[in-house]
Length: 85
Image (cartoon, rainbow, N blue to C red):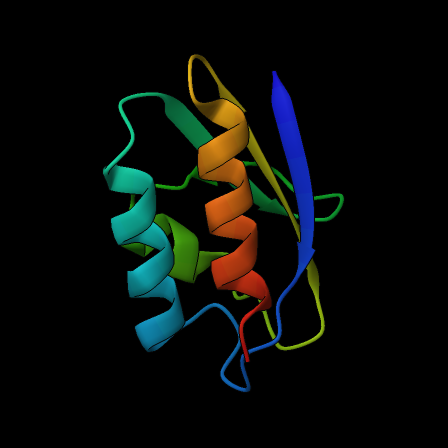
């Protein structure tokens, strides 16, 4: 299983547009992807309700996990989305 940590940079946190962009990118991958607040329980990264339910705020760290072919590439892309201001 591959993993990335990212600090959420968007002023609104991982909500609204950043959350939608994150989920849409995750949905393009056929592999299972989870996201969690650092130290929290992971949720399905392809579910907008689950991702918004994490209530991730600006400056908080998330942990993204993926398993399968292409995991590193999708994790890099999702981390970049999370870290974009």
